[in-house]
Length: 482
Ligand code: AMP
Ligand code: ZN
Image (cartoon, rainbow, N blue to C red; front, side, top):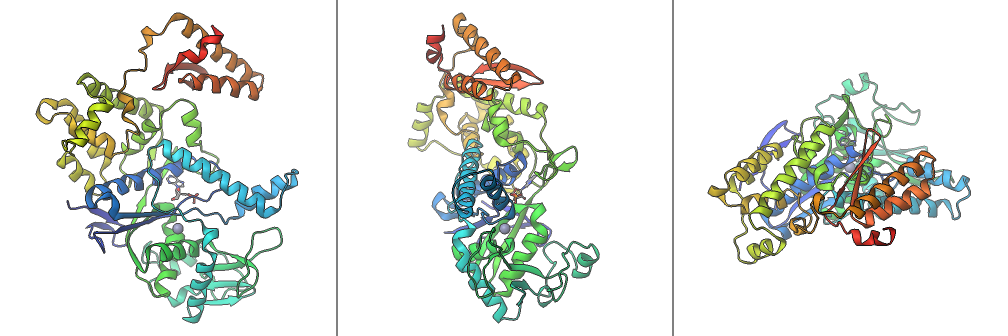
């Protein structure tokens, strides 16, 4: 099957042809691990997970390598660790930094798994690749593309004539745009940091240029080289990273003599009222916030798939409701036609589990997820023509089913729930509301845990809580409160 991808480098859609069909390789810039992922951070994860799934379908699950890093060297992580130390937390600053990264990585993996994202093949952490970064910087210095000044190693931007080609900017425009940091030790204001000195309250490693830490850009160049080799197929990330991060990655890797990435892919931003959702603007909410409000991970994922990855998008409650209804309808159709986890397993075992070729073709056209969803509506309607296997297959391929147990009818329909259960749940919700109002967070959390142990999904919309039985609804745990 032919796949076409929009390559930022050439600004058009091109037919994808991997360097080695037996090992298609992709690198995606991962998060800086200093806090919970906000909903915007989920966009590249879902986009590139969908691409990962498409590549696995096309080339075989064992023939795709996907690397997504964790940036665990960052001033924001240091700041959190330092604040914790000043607040009396035990341990050295290094311990507290490691603890903070570890905690954040755990949250991240949990939240992204809830969105149906497969784990990448490798998830390197920057702190594990310091030696490779130092080696690459030494190589750049030896080749005349970098220099040392006042404990810093800097990349000599004017030594790379193609600088700006990826993002489509000229060096002079960039200077005029004043997007560069002027510093007395720089030969040229455009030059960027490969290595910088660390003070005692910052993490640091010994290097030929003194005790310090790497700049952000060199991390990805060094990790991609180590894990994927001299050249690889696809490099992805949000379009906020095209300049300067990706431009600098290209400069470093190319000047060190490597082929680097053939295809560059960038997802557009998740916006709030026309502005990028970001921590620094304060206009964000986390993936965890939504999950805790009872919005299923599959529903969140479907909202993202409803917009093409190269278009800006907003999260709205109307879209959430639409996605919820789409999923409910599709699963209802499957259930009504006798689909269960067992029948799905049988279909797979008997070799009758097959994709709709047209849908995969649409998806292969630069990851046209809205087109693929439109095709699913057709498949669901014209089921006498197609049967339901293509619909079920598409749900799985797009990451919209984490477990076919969703087809089990164990979740009691609302009107079959005994009255005492409704009474107990409503009492618990009222008590949780009161605990929150009086800022008794401990009690509020305890009640929430109790409700979630019973598989009750609570959503708070405009200050009013409503509930529904989830897939794992089990009121027997509420028996003693009867
Ligand atoms: P950060 O931790 O800010 O470096 O971001 C991690 C990843 O999330 C990068 O690929 C960013 O491009 C992406 N990202 C950050 N904010 C948004 C947003 N509002 N919409 C889509 N992607 C985003
Ligand atoms: Zn990167």
